[in-house]
Image (cartoon, rainbow, N blue to C red; front, side, top):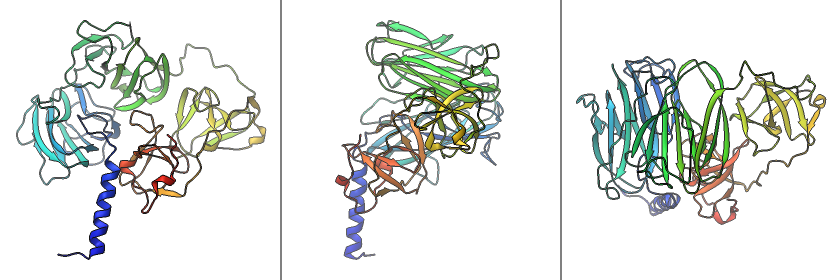
Length: 477
């Protein structure tokens, strides 16, 4: 078949654009940086509707004789994880260890590249070498648990960059006692390879000063991971972390705190709603240099033994309705950098008890907690009756619109900054047209506004509209 000259030229132009978009990405070294969507089924055949679906930062679980989450039995369940990862061109070794069985598919093959359903290999590392082109590749892992212990782990490595076989180590099984933690210490900051030390510890809280966790762990550039399976009462919990340097906290595989960067004595807060029963907690930490410490705490947000919160102002008849599609942050002070006390959903209604002097922030109560919400994302009734209880604050800066549009070819995260280690503040569905308001100097990230949220998306997954002059987009990050 032949194509007209203009068609061939168009195909070449599209190929050049795609290569340019991916040029700024770093090669994938191992199985990190992927946001997995995990669908959990209360049967062994992935049939019917899942009991729950959650986002997870890695496929590395050991549930032991327990359940992976609410609505799923301890035996005879299944999970399907799916994610998209960018790879540099090369040959990659994918390795899976599981109890019981798995299918691994990379890029929708007719037959799985790893299949332990037909050739059981419980507890054994099973690998396959796949040659991949540069670009985004889809990965799907199906897992089946029958009886006994339940665990699964997936990793991959570029064979040319890492000739030795990179295994997929199963994380430590839950230790006896609901308050016990399994600690794994690594001699690098990204959990690469096998842990140098594994311990049973009562808490992730430590203060090593300028020292090291152990003689075989370096004083700088190390990382640690704590996992636990506590049984908790249902309700709202506050997660509080103070660290130097980077910290991530996952609850049931979902990140509640993601501050993976160098810091000096920083404190982070998150609020989560948990069902009664067993939950999977994971705390990741890395030390870059200087002092090394971590204070971690998770506790019910409302302590029945504590005195009631003070009355901040006289009650009003006003209410506020959340109007944003993403969760709205409720902060401790009327400014965008204050600690987050809670996250509230679209359509929920809360009492409005105060405002600051320029009405750019509303003071509301959320389940007994008093905090502040930005005016743009809250529709307030009877606003004139709301008393002033705080001073004026600078409005949240909104970059000017450029008229340039972009459309993601897959679901893409909106981040607070132009880097994958910044916080996720929203998501743009595949095919949704969004406004581009800025870029970074390398043209690898676009600053966008989706009508509610201003943030950053990876240029690799969000092509600009045809004919866009990139130089007309201001450098904003």
